Picture 1 (cartoon, rainbow over the protein chains, first blue to last red):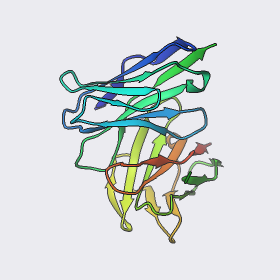
Picture 2 (cartoon, helix red, strand yellow):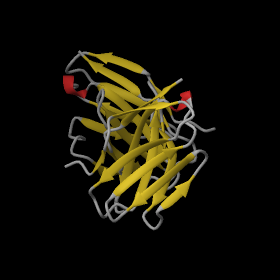
Picture 3 (cartoon, each protein chain N blue to C red):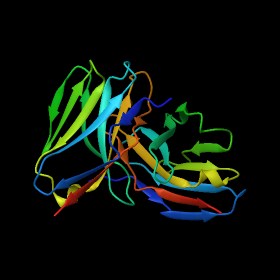
Length: 112
Length: 114
């Protein structure tokens, strides 16, 4: 079964606004989570990661929040720009293997 | 910035034919992976490779699939007898250490089986 999933398949956001992309996971053994961005015709591009011993991590314009109690992961993008338009995937690793399990993806469209 | 390079970018093949997808991982990386993405769907793990052997594979990676590191730079995925349902984007990735740290994906090969 699918252990990682996203709440919404599409998100439309006004340029300059903040974006929040959500992800739910079901495997409580997962201890490492990554957000990827995929632009059309390209491979997944690493955005930010977080380990299960943390609940928040910040990068440049991005913040990842992890709520292990409800098995929820979110990506916040501050001051969304047109270049942020892409499909965003969350992925997890459960620590005893090498593979990433990806969610279904959220398509983010930034309106000018 | 170092890149994972994949060739070709697009491959069209007839059903039943063999295809080889090629990847050049980042030079100091030790772990190599293949993933695939059927159009509009999520990215799925196929196989991981370390120290010249498969370290893990998914149920998708059946006897029709094989991987090889024929020299010090290339990492290949072979599909022996392609099926229509093999049509997908195939992504190669590499990492310096295991467990997905510093994972870098290539731009993918779009395989179309007709």
